Image (cartoon, helix red, strand yellow):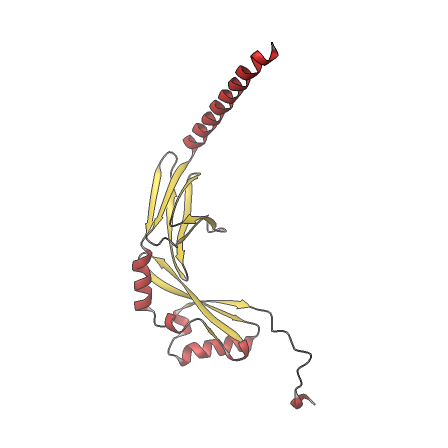
Length: 193
């Protein structure tokens, strides 16, 4: 007798749970908007952040995410090439953003011969100069990173840029302080004795 009611009860519970899930999805979709992001490069990493906070990975090549209304910064990056764009999400609407990474890569290579020289590591690994590109409004601007464990290393890196004809004041430069390389206890330095 009990077996007779178990199967219909399980089916009723499953239908009820499905109905509750659908109802919950409808409530969420009525309060949010959708962002669809596409990139011309299948290797493009897509990310999004709100109010310039920590970026969240959302996919490769293309993504579709449901978001609360507000302004977001969405980006696509391939290697050191990155394009960012601000998007406004509105409740109940779908916003689409496309990134043409191939055009951006060609423009970056053509406009920035500094890129062809980087990354570079200075003598005794005292500094490393690298870059990444940010594209806004179809214009590229390189961001230079100088990693060094000393002020002298930072100054030497800036001197390197100047030596090759690049004015450091023309670029946004981010300085990263690194840990000095370990001292080899087995190294014999006759000048020290």
